[in-house]
Length: 60
Image 1: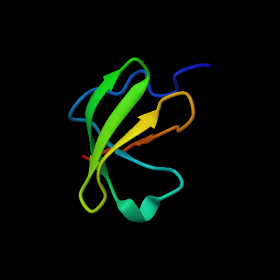
Image 2: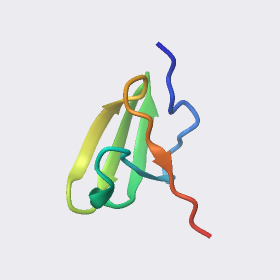
Image 3: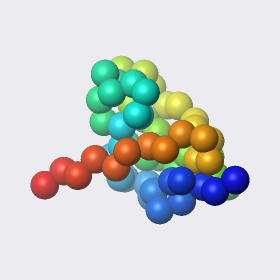
């Protein structure tokens, strides 16, 4: 499978496409296709980069 989030790096802010109410979370790590994101109200969650296309938040 293709890692849809290979470009994500620690410090980048993302949202989850199925749970926009979680708000933006901060990428903590991206290793071996597993992305750890810290969401303010959900805590740290780990996603499979080939299954969940996280959305990069453009903060100007």
